[in-house]
Structures are given as C-alpha cells and as structure tokens.
Length: 290
Image 1 (cartoon, rainbow, N blue to C red):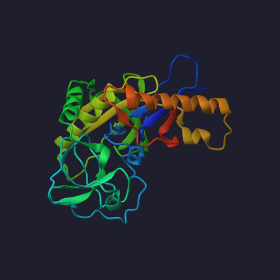
Image 2 (spheres, rainbow, N blue to C red; image 1 turned 45 degrees about the horizontal axis):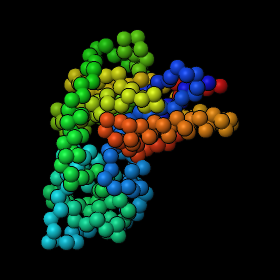
Image 3 (tube, rainbow, N blue to C red; image 1 turned 180 degrees about the vertical axis):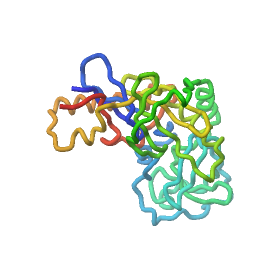
C-alpha cells in the first residue's frame, strides 16, 4: 500500500518514508500555508481559495469609534474572496475600525480600512506586536531555496489548477516532479509576481517533516516563475476513496499521519502555520492504491 500525503496547495507533490506504512504528508499552500494567528477562530480553517463560512450579505460598515485609532500590521498576504473583504499584503498597515462580529458577519473577522477601502478581513492575519512581524520576516529572509534553471525542466501534462496557478507533471534531472507555474496577473508588474514566488518558495523551504511535502527548488527566470515540488504518483485521496471500502485501521493510520503533519505546521515549524484547506482532494498518495 503506497504512502499517503497531505497537500497544503492544489499540488501533486509528495514523498514517502521508509517505515513501510501508508504515509500521509502535508504540502504547505498554499500559499499556500497560512500564518500563525493571534486569535483562534473558524477563519483559521479556510483556504486561500475559499472564504470562511459566513453571510456575505453582512457587508462591512464604517468605523464604529473614531476616537481610538487602531493600527495593525499584516503578517501575511490574504486575497479578498468577496467585494466586502480587504486584500492584505505582508507588512501593510491596517486601520482596525471594529472587532465586532455583528458588523463583520463572522467570529474572527474584523472591519478595517486600507487607504480608502473599507472591508472585513481575518483577524488572525494581523498583529500589533512588531517583534512578531520582525521575527517572521527575519526567519524567511535568511532562507535560500535552490534556484532551478527553467531549461532543466521537462514539462508534461497539466495535472491540476490551484490558487497559485497551473500544476504540471514534469522531470528535473531525471526526477519526477510537480511544477507549479505562477499565475501572472496582467495588471501586476512581473517583478512583483517574481518576489511573491520567491517569498512563497522561502516559506516552503523551511518545512522539513516526514508528513510535509518538500520543495525541490524554485525557478525565478522571467517569465517562467514556478515552484518545483515532489510528485505524488498515486493521485488525490478523494479519488482513492471513491468507490472503495478502506479498512478502518488504514483510515485511522492516515488520519494520525495527517494530524502529525498539522501539528508540525502549527507547533513545530520554524514559523507556525495554519493549513486552511484541509480536505481529501488535498491529500495525495505516493503510489498506486490496490
């Protein structure tokens, strides 16, 4: 029975271990991967590609207290999933207008303002503690992933599409890999996209655990910006489970391995992360399941 892996992005990358068990691993999305929260909320369980469960009819309103200016710093990037949300960029200053969930429409979401834009955002993406932001920035800044020459990559078919962009099956120096090509916004300067990919690669490169998918390297040759990840040959868990009856002991073993990967992300990684998109379609097996 092949090892089983957890992906934090819509990736096919994965790896097994040598203990002979069916293994589950996590690949941080994610952009993948999302940051250490300063509050605990259901927003921690959402993905970069799906907003938390809440009523989008509860539009963000204006400030509730004009006397107390509350400035917070964004720890990580967040892409708005609706017109009532704010997009955040790491290091950006957010003026918090209200922490009232009755205004934001969901626990763990605040109302804030960036420039002239008023909207709601996940509270666990901001901090008032400068030392936390400086620590995160310092750790990531010191990381240097392997840079891969795009000419060394042999790309095959598209095997997935995620928030980061298209994912290709490919080969690098004879090794089967998953190549995540960065989506390029026509309205965004290519140098900005390149820096985002660089930061994404640095975050992936920090993760070293038997249940976490590893990054092989990053390509930063414009316009070919991509992450090169390990490849999970067996495909996603939701397909493995479809139409099959899996023994309870196998399911329990897989669940334990997923939990170990999540515990590492939350408590053991150099920078604590939260997954926000844990589901069977983001679990992958290393080989064929019979």
